Length: 259
Image 1: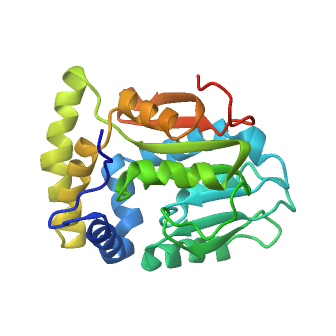
Image 2: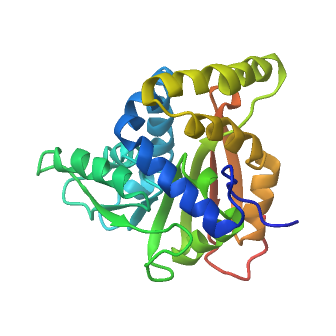
């Protein structure tokens, strides 16, 4: 099957898709947090917290090397930091949208100096300037869906993980049944109108439901993770499947049979 990835309106190839996504998130950065909380009725905070708890054992190890990729304005990073002990190695928070990363830096700087912290990195998720096999945990919250090539992203995360390292991807999905139909009405009609009212922009909030509709369904996403070399792949739905957490492990033995 051909590689899939984000397809913003007007993008002709992966390079133009990535540029469009980068420009879009830079443009909405000033209102991004407000809009997220309004559109999700603050449920997004619960999702970040729940995902962070899943990784508590790794986060509780002070020397573990952790990357929050596509970190946006840093809310997932902050949820992860709640599980870090004092004196821990800083979490690496990376994004390629400079305006989003600037807001994350402001949040991290506001933390008490005695608390665990994060350092930022302006970087493309498909071309990470990190050593192979250097990370214990890679997390992405609501950013993976925007990559120009999902398979390339999975393989790049696999590259930088240590053998035995864990990947976590928190992202939207489309629930089925009556709830799915009601959610589709909200997502495709009401959400763009709210986004336009708050930001004065239309295209980012037309892109959002389109990006969720184009994103691989959980069975396909899990298959892609297996094909990229992960084992123990799983999906945990949140809030009736509106969102969910994908997890997978880079095998300690790369020749191990994929489960």
